[in-house]
Image (cartoon, rainbow, N blue to C red; front, side, top):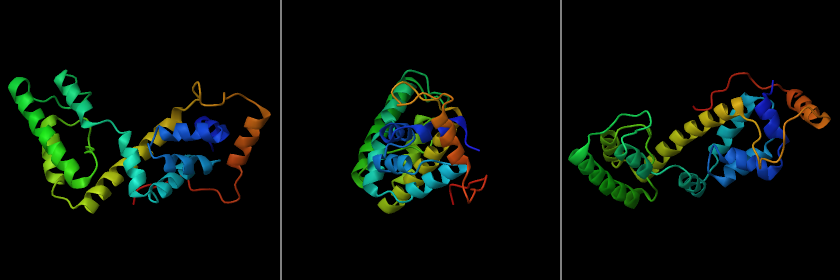
Length: 206
C-alpha cells in the first residue's frame, strides 16, 4: 500500500516533485527521472526505480550531485566549535590546528588527483579519522575512487528517500496540499491497483 507521503508526491506537479526528490540527491537528471517515473505503488517500487536510475547516472550527473553535499570545511568548523554533531571530538589547541592544516593540504592533493571534492564516508568521524581516510583513499585509481563515492552516495540517498517518504507532507511551495479529494483518492487507487504487484521487500544495493 502507498504511504501518505508517496501518495502526496504522486500528486505533485512535475517541477515540484523534482524539488522534493532533489532533497535526496542533487543530480537534476536523477530528480527528473524520479518525477517522471510516478505514480509509485509503494516504497519498494520507488526505491527500486531510484536505484536503477542512480546506476544510469553519468560522471557529470554525479559531479552535479556532489556540489550539494556539505564540504569537509563544515565538519572542520564543527570541531573547531567543539560540537562534532554526534561524532568523535578531535584534540584541542595546537594539536587541532596541526590536524586541520594537514587535512587542508590533503584535500588539495585529493582534488588535484580525482577532479572532485573529497566526500567522507562518515561525516561524523573525527578529524584524525578523516586524515587517515583521505590518505588511504588517495591510493585509489580515479575510476575506483569514483565508484566508491558513488556507491556510498547511492546508499545514503536511498536511505534519505526512504526516511523522507515515511514522514513527508507537502511544504509551502511544494505545489499541493494533501486533503481528501476525489482526485487524491483516484490517484491513490491508481497507485494501489497494478496488474503486477511489486515485492514488499527491496534490496537496493547489490
